[in-house]
Picture 1 (cartoon, chains in turn yellow, green):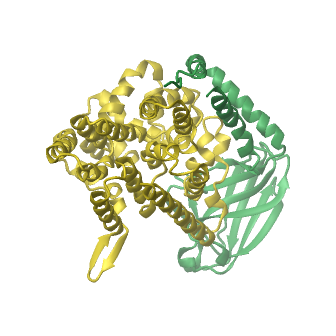
Picture 2 (cartoon, one colour):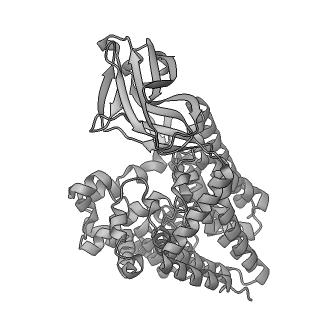
Picture 3 (tube, one colour):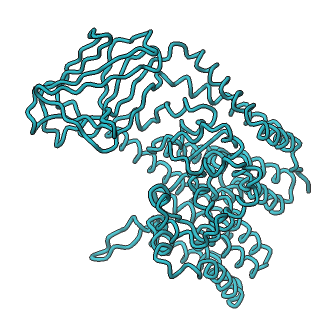
Length: 380
Length: 193
């Protein structure tokens, strides 16, 4: 945990550190401040992320120490060289462990049988996807992932209003839980129940962004950012009209959701998220969105270890070919800056070969994701 | 549960060794450009002096400009020390990509640490086809020196030594990490019906 460093954890913490200096509207502030305008031009996450992580930083200030702020403003490229790097990484990643353990607790509730429990928890805690995305890269996607999973769990327990609130909270960290809302809406529950659920989910999310909605910086960096539009970028031409490939597939899935109510909600959630990864160039940390549901599929024997291994292998193959050393060789730079000198595979391959490998990797990953969708769908 | 945690821990401890086994060279000087360019042409060579920070100097990369790849003339790179030419390399402008790092590799100089060297770039090109060297604010070339690793075993040992020194340097971290590991190994997760 404290031995792996990706600059994203420092970049995000630089931005949320302004909460301790009294900055409320981080979006407008980053566009105005002369230092951060160059080195930290935007904050692309919803406001709750800023307040949550910023508050955590304030609480843990005594542990982080007086040099922490200087470290945040170290743009030399060798910030992992500081002797306090292990401390910073441990303290900053502890919340992720807490949320991972909360999902562990939920899995124990979902699987009362001891053998299934053991299988679920072992897979959940020790699968390479989680270890890499949560603790090596150190992004906070485990938080909205927990909230999305908790929302599903509450729905399963028929605590529908609570499920809506929690889903809205998840969207207030990262907007992907909103993609799952139609899957709840098209279930066989009573109409009023579903409407209350949706209103609460959208309402909580709306309340969290309301104070910033009129900010142009918030609109460009969060609401209408390239990141939030990414899943809709791949388009299909139908005559003179171009439609997002994801929208076409997702709409089809929603029709199936209405027709095949005997397929559990978690299966549809997993299929939706797998489809997102199949049609998008995704960030490696996003994989955590689906790993709780992948755990369910694994334990309920919808997919075996062989397919899981293929999925994991194709995921890592994709990221070996990213032009970011910190996804691979440079992750160990806290141990020694010598690891910054190890070239990544992209630096060793020539451009033509690299493009072929990249496309092949993405194609392979999408294929295996679709295979899992098929397996999960097939066993009604 | 404990065996998984221990296996993971052992893997993390071994991972640096596995990565270091792939390393063939290390950098010495790394000087970055700041947007300015100095062109070298007929009767106007580009010269740069430097002191090698490490032994086993064997290669230098220089950030060069060849706008529109228009230069196709011979270019000469010479490395010297104490007014003695150590190496001379001829290449063609077509091998020099615009705005890219061009590597010049020569016979390894084992005792290069703290020695003074100079490299010269020369060409007979006219001004409209000259190749440029990207420089920093002090008109020093953007260049990187590369040094072979004399002993991979020593490198691995040195790296783990650095690692343990760094761990010990922050005693506060060592304390909380120790408590954290003990708490983890006591495994709060119990499987029960």
